[in-house]
Image (cartoon, rainbow, N blue to C red; front, side, top):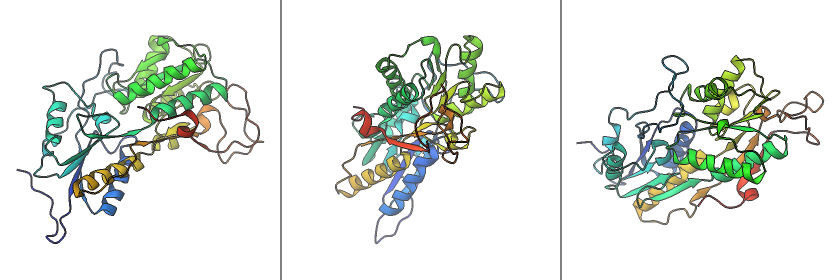
Length: 356
């Protein structure tokens, strides 16, 4: 039987588990940092259980490319770590349901995990509803619409490729819905041949999707599409590496943007324009909510956290430290008036309310 983490007899400290896919890829580390800071402030123990995604790849996703750097292998539960979700070890939990692929049908590992979560005193689900637990959301829908509006109105781009995430991932589906809604709003063509779904978000996934578009479908930058929209920075950075390897220049030949504003967006060359979603703030809010429920106090009122658009060089905007005289025009030949530094836009205020 699992042993509860120690606490002082004078002041019992609740133990909260973070059940997630990982804390080392993309925004996983960002959310984890917010969880740790809030746990210290709330005087709670926190135990991370990064057990991997639970849902298999959907039909129609980009297939694995075989062994090597381009291989795409779906995540699987790691070492039965989810069996540690029990009231003997945890008082409450934060379940990052969207990264795990929850909910899943009865009889699956995901359903077994959901049943274990139901035994705990307080549970918060992140970015995807799960049973009758409280849900906290990031407003990615509005962020994606603002991103497409930027490409269409500032840079005059018309034919947009989309590298979406796994078809079974609810957040990926929501971002793709926002992508298609934005295309319709701006009168841009919707062509299914310009869309590729990756198996996951790990190394090689974005490159595999880009190969499908370039090699299988025979699409050519400038002729068939003028921008690539990746539904995560990890996928976008991966696609950018492949384009660089093939001598396709970003942004002069094709623009490329990501999503999440994770570390991958900042270390690529050029850095990626992205939508910043405050994952650290979401993690902190989740800890505060679970801790309040465990202690019988009022939790924070917020349930939806908005994002912001961050423009960088990959879409054709100038870098923060490049003067107007040294920078060429953005992709499409349109130069905004005046200096164009790093721009952060509150997409929640500009595009309307949160996702329902």
